[in-house]
Length: 217
Image (cartoon, rainbow, N blue to C red):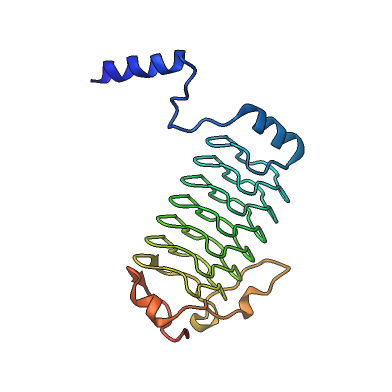
């Protein structure tokens, strides 16, 4: 079976078809983006953009499935309607980025900075948000089924109408209600912020939640 798979992969390679995980970016799109920092609707699936300075980039409606953006700076980037399914965004700087209606299902956002990000109706199903900074982020109507928000900072995070069924929120920074330490960010006094905008109904659908039970609908 393994030999047959190898022959199939070789055959596809000779035909010029992508065989690396099903993702193959468009080289012209990649070159255009690296040159201009603008590439709406581009195909950058599977591209390695890790560690790059991409602040203010326009990637609206682009295909970034499986892309590597680990530790990249995407401050104030336009990522509306972007497909970031299974992308690596660990430790990425996404503060104030616009991610409305983006698909981040299965994405790795471990320790990512999403403070003040606009993420209305975003897809975060099965996403990893462990230790992510979500303070003051707008996640109204987000689809967050089975997402992992353990140790995440959710100070005044807008989670109204978000679908949190099966989500995990363990040992998170819930704000002043739990007297947790504030962020050292010099521009925002996180220590003065309260907890997330979250209803008891939403809490009841979560797999794990160890925060305060007083947030209103």
